[in-house]
Length: 309
Image (cartoon, rainbow, N blue to C red):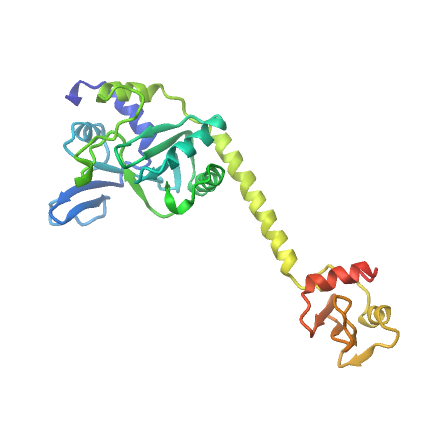
């Protein structure tokens, strides 16, 4: 009976897995399948069938006694999480690939909930909560290094800010195909006390280390975004030296053709015999357009080769 489990083991479990004590999910097996009812203070209690209760030691003990099955919120009220979880509902070996990458990076991982035909959950527990956005960016990098497609694995938290939840470790799985198996961790003996004692002794991963990786990835993402934008932007945006259009036109052609407010010259980016490049002065910088369809990056490269910019 869980009444014999020490309070410190329950407290340790809560500190590792429970992001919110006010919001969680209660699993109910019905004739039509498995339903999960969100438990939250302001919710309709379905005519009193599922009255609200907050997460407490008493609730955890009931869960460990298999009286109820719970799901824990993946983020807290500030969109932070105490953990990262990879979830695989198939036996593909992807969870082991992810675990190998994380161990090579010196992270401690916990594998839970595996059964025939299913890889189960892989948990990364943090020393203090991290923003879900940073956790998810870190997770995507892990998947990339593991060679695992994101569509083949569920990652929790599922969203940067939106609510998601996952079945609680050590709770009984009510899915008919699971045969009410408990979500055991694979290392310790399969009894509740041994599992809780083992969990309490497990190393928490340094949140700073995870966040540092995520912030570096965000910076790299931003740099790549700027590079893509630079490759796609018009050559006339700050890349051209501040020379008048007439001067640039004369550098390209001995006798450029006047065209409205600008000049027409042969485009240096392709073999041009029709004066396809129009050059004119913008409000603050030079503007160029090739009517033959040359990309602006190609025009800029050709102008640089000629020493015009």
